[in-house]
Image 1 (cartoon, rainbow, N blue to C red):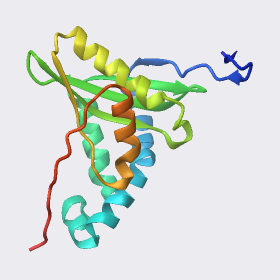
Image 2: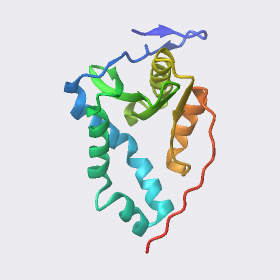
Image 3: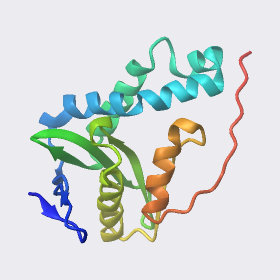
Length: 172
């Protein structure tokens, strides 16, 4: 449903967010690959081809598809999807790591739906669930490379505090 903002401009209604269903699997995997393509391009530029290949193999899409599938199949995960026009446009997965600590394990927004606050909304849904489960601390991780800058903005906007870390790689 559309509305008007305070200036009278027509605005789009936010995408509905609902619980994940196993029939969403292929759409979630596909959107995650589209969403993370710029991230993996950035990682290749930062790390160089040799280190990148050691970490992600011949085709990062194969490893990432498997990683997303593992999350989707994990019964401990709580997963939500956003929809636009009947199509899955984003997802978030959260899990309790202990009685007091929860984690946003994965988040992806389709590039076609980016820059409209959907990542922040999905992060909020996952964070709220962690709070409801009794978590006193919520954790989320991302990279420090340029390709992860949009993710860092989303997490900061959602109230998370970043801790810069350094991880060094060397091929042998």
